[in-house]
Image (tube, rainbow, N blue to C red; front, side, top):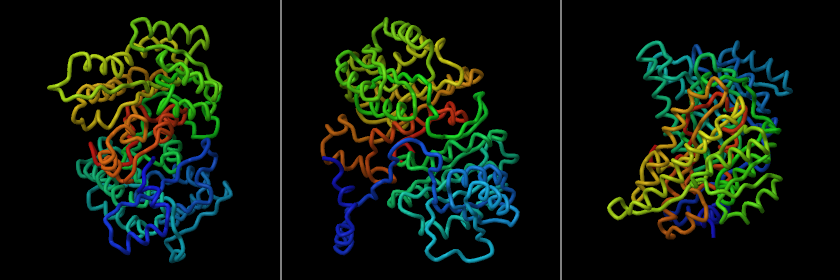
Amino acid sequence: MGDLFVKLGRSRTARRVIRALRLPLPLPQELRRARGSWQERPLDDLPVIVGHASGGELVSALAGVLPAAGAVTWVVGSRDQFEVYRERGEACGRAAAWLSDREPPEDLRPGCLVFDATGLERPEDLRAVYDFLHPWIRPLRPCGRVVVVSRPSDQTSTPAAAAAARALDGMVRSIGREIGRKGATAQTVYVDGGAEDRLEAVLRFLMSAHSAYVSGQALRISSRASGEAIGLRPGSLEGKVALVTGAGRGIGAATARALAREGAHVLGVDRPAEAESLEKLVGEIGGTSLPSDITDPDAPDTIAEFVKERFAGLDVVVHNAGITRDKTLANMDAHRWEQVLGVNLVAVIALTDALDPLLRRDGRIVCLSSVSGIAGNVGQTNYSASKAGLIGYVQALAPMLAERGITANAVAPGFIETAMTAAIPLMTRQVARRLCNLSQGGLPEDVAEAVAFLSSPGAVGLTGQVLRVCGGSFVGA
């Protein structure tokens, strides 16, 4: 049936009537989602307002990203900063405008707001972030983006600077709460010194329609994993081989489609009971199927041998397969506990160990965790334990694989509209949808977009991270 409130929200008449009657009904903004592959210019002709704190260190990096992504850049800052954008913009056929010497046009409605906060030295300097964002939050377009970029607090020179850097996280998460009603999102990106060249792909993802259901996140870009920094471009996964477990339906099927769309050859793995849907999927995307129950003792070696003989190696591993067997702990039998931990965590570790020798340099591992693994949930001690375990797993795995250029990350979905959530009672489902900044559930495609991004060469700066695809969930924030 879908979300009735999102459908009503598409109608201007419905919005006017509800406002006139002062009815307490939430009408979420329909999200602008990507249709198709990553683009060379995802921000084509989109007005982007960019500013820098005094002493900001990312002028050159941002000036290199925004015009190349197609943005029409309006610069709030010094003349010297503007000149950098002007030169880069002209090289990309995108003129930049300087907002420091004149009033902006009355009809200027930005699609993105980007602020470089790397120059903050004390909490008082946060005023610069306020001064930049304050006049532009209201005119920000529906489904707009706010991104604040900073240094991590543990790379600052003083405790006061660390306080200012950490304060940004709380500030930006709160902004995400405030602008979510218009379908807009807000993120903080912390960039390690020396990792500036890895910023481009992350910004391209967060500022594009491919991140429609990602909000209130704080990501850290580092040089931990070796490898070349490559932007997010069409066909970035050409020639790659990607294994996806649980690929027969739901999030797994959406992920397989997203990876194939960007050029990867997908090896779909799912239980023999899902063989029919799995075959249909791989036929649709030109992939390869391997019916296998990953909890079978022989499954890891069998899958690894198949990969070795068929492809000689792997570039991407997506651990998507997972189950729920909900009961409160007092009512949960041991079989339910063992079953969920076995599928969601134990099998993931065993399969990764078996595939490790086949993972090519610059490979990617992505594990599907959950907001339940961050916040816990009634009746899901087994599920929450398994999903929290995956977070600990990728955090420990990341430094072990870094020298080979392999990254390991987790994606934590919130309330996603799937066959499983469709079985939840109606009122419970409606409440769950509203418990996030965007006041609506996500789609399997939203999760798939995040997985595809983390599977790309451009995501080399992200490893040991947890990317929540939850619409800025109020749970576990």
